[in-house]
Image (cartoon, rainbow, N blue to C red):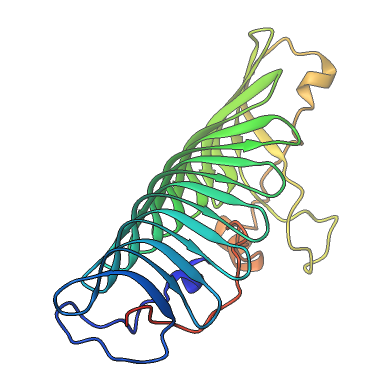
Length: 268
């Protein structure tokens, strides 16, 4: 995650502490009466990164642009040396985040643009999708609108396709519990999602073929519409807790740039 890229100021002096004279990069800009970087300035760090923007008492503070030597860059608000406020972060892989930050982490409302052209727009908490959000799948032009918890779809939501949409509840990124399909011909199909082991596969299978058990059906669907999702029925001798034990959670977080850089102090 990009916090490893941006936590470059942990060795900077505390406010009011006399800065050490060290090989901390080349600085051009304003200083305060204590000799600290204060006001507008430009710093070229020893690792090749560069910052251009505002300082306060030796810390990046205000508006500024931080450019990493690997191509990543952040343009936005800073507070006491950390990304805090509104800002845009471009990653080396081409992905991009635009939105709110708090203490170097995505926090608040923001939009993330993925490499495969998918888009997430909604709430974030400590670098994870958390709260109300919408995820647009570019390849199918479908989208999920609902609640997220710790980077996963969790709680109520709806999955919208061109010809139908599904209202229901999600658990660990999968529909679970009561739900309803609504089709473009105004027909509805009610059902209940559960997740069980498929006997056609052995225990090494990581994910089941989902089936659905219909609780009630009021529909005049065509045959092709009725088969929009595979149906699942529960095995009475395989409770939910065994399924979750046999098939551990997968990490659905977006791919973050993982390269670590050594902490650098861009204080004089």
